[in-house]
Length: 201
Image (cartoon, rainbow, N blue to C red; front, side):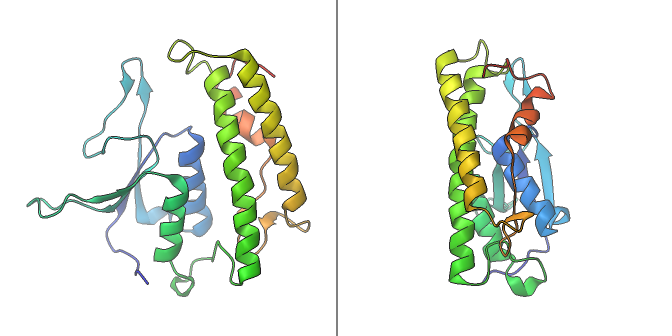
């Protein structure tokens, strides 16, 4: 089992992005936010900013091992949100004093994975809606109003499914795994509150 690092690891995020927020919410719920240097990356008219030391790729990106000044290694990075969460759960084992986010029994862990599977599909589907209905991507990508409508309906369906598989006693979707409840309003408000949605339904 890996031990907790005494050096802050760098995490590059797109502040308003769904997948980076998945990781930052996890860090806050886990109580380990202060262990990381969270580096926001912005999109400008010229494209995505490239802060110093950031590897190429979309956010989130977690630096697992820093490259040495002498060039003895190239560093190690994780580029997907779910593998980042799995890695951190392995690093911050239950004996570290942080809450176990996956559950302690096979049944509890299966329930958490069940919920996360639905959440991941809903996030992907909502992302398809955003790409076809967001002002951010207007002009950058070809947008399809029909695709946006289908994606949003599918997102509604998946969130309804999530309510059926969730822990009925709440507020967690899976009580042992501490997976928080989501709502369609929460997903939409990330964008509409910042006037980034066109508003197709």
